[in-house]
Picture 1: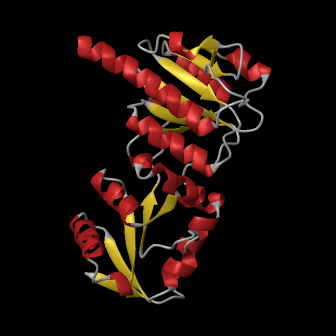
Picture 2: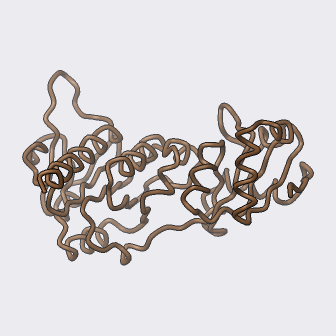
Length: 269
């Protein structure tokens, strides 16, 4: 059954708060996803969807009707809102006719066991980069993505859109960098800091062994003390005049290099 909400209802005000403020998201343990693709991904993966909100003008769209049915079958409350209300709540350039509130499910660092490949994002500030890296981690079969330092909130609306639903399919961990490195080393993982020059050639790294790659801030990279925390450093060979690669691209390249090595090993079996 679809319930109707007024534009001034407290649930609408809550949606706006959760979209706008990281502190409110984390105090409530809830974030907001926008668009049919993200809502579908949440339902497919069994995420703890609290409620789905539909623009009443979209109730006759087949894709929206299907999501309402799937949500209702999963015990999710469905609310309709007057045309234009969700548009005012959204921070997207192209507002979507469907949103959902979802309970967070971050993984504790202590819950990781036998990770094969991990991406560690340290002070990654750009939501697009963080979302891209989470998406690449999912696509390459990474064991987890760990966000450390002052990295962007993985549940930021822009980050969520950039993940294209992968936020529901790869374990997300928030922790301190030193604790992360110590824990991973204790699990037998080689932790490699990414540096522009002077690190091990990424083509020669044995990614078949458990490995974590630490990516630094987009403009500053990793500091010398942060690099020293790690087992070693890694660099991606480049041609041309570019000084460095975008963090999202660099991390994605390394994630897939690791995936292809593991895939080759499994194929040879």
